[in-house]
Length: 593
Image (tube, rainbow, N blue to C red; front, top):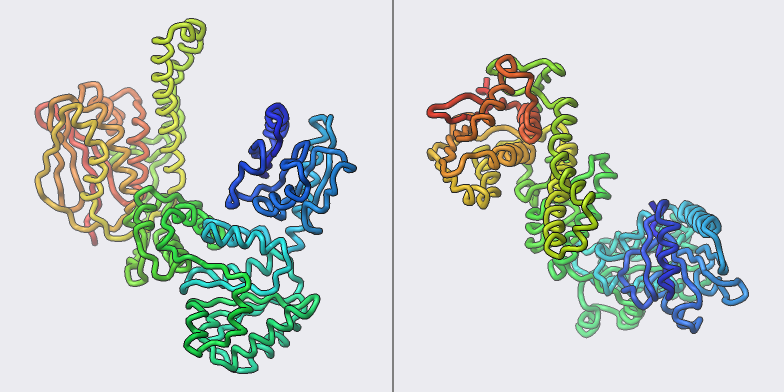
């Protein structure tokens, strides 16, 4: 879905365009370009209203260059009222559509701009895919804003100052592709090259015409190699279609000049447009968005399923000091995704160091129970099937839907009474929250694939799941008692087992009898929970385990999700009657051969 930005001083025009374009596109509306910051996400099309905002056309050009450069434009005015092509570079499509216009005309104009832009991107050899690496969060916001100006001018020499791993090489290549340069892309490490090598590399690639040359570690080059770079820059500035030169350096060149280690004239040349790539440890607020960008790119590159990072995982990534900056962050995310194969990334799964990579064992083959066939006695619970999902989903959604429907039917009286209004708002918010939580749980479950096995402490995972319900247990005056027996490490997928235990707790805790004790028992190859519930709850669980004793009961949805994931990880989930009206839930892994 394309993103459309509507800029118009009229609230009626903004809302009309939101309604007309909304079914096909993601529409954002603002009254003025002044409402946008330089790091505003780049839209696919900008619609500018009448009169131009700001009114002065030169000021309008400057505002467009500042916040939305190189974006296709649709101007809601007559072609005679404005020099449209002055508002965008020659390769960026611009169209005009004077008022009054109809819905069909506006949709047709937007589609035409999108088609034209798609053709430009194809001709630009992947420029759209590279553009995120010229914007925040990959770059600091100040650097991204300065690069926006660079992209709208024929700046031939750019200096990138930053520590190792801040992404200078990625930025240089993105600049080459985004600018649509028809020549070659040449990268040279000045610290490891010899005099004359730079010229030979450029000649072998087809010459400097239309090329982009990236020179890394210029501050570590000897004086002869510095002379080669100075000649390259001189030619770039003198020739109409000379090379664009991007240089990377880690140290302050002024200090190097003062020490006599760097040519002063070259330092001035490469710092004409200096762009500082701030270390990642100095901008932890960018880590969440940066993780999302890199993870999406890596999943597409490695053909992996999309992943979601838990808040605790994001917080752990923000607290690390990233000695290798964004390049190290990308390596850590790639290592975690490839080795762990998670759908939901927990904080403990992140593999910061290569030596922390766990041994990945073979995935055991767990035969699935036939659909509608009961599991044999003692073998745990049947695998999740469509009947369970549909039946329990309908059951879980019915109550909140009834709440909303009831209040909707009495809307007149609800609106007239402030007290009833407040109650209505609270109950409907709670009902919608329940449905939203349920759907999010199902989406999380759907992301899981084959387990990535490693040695995990399943009792510790159960304790983590129970800790999330400490407040509910306290309200019910339910005490947790542990026998202090630990379990041996089990080969399982940590994220999947934790999800299963959370699902068990979510399905169990609301049904616990008040003023009772929840007993957690460790065993060599698993864990047990001994609980007290209402007789009907215990009977339902027993009927699920032994269908012949019941009346064809289907399992509670949360328990069915837990059972499926535990079975996928080689475990069995069993329920039996305990002593004195208690119920025992046991999760157990088979003995090793």
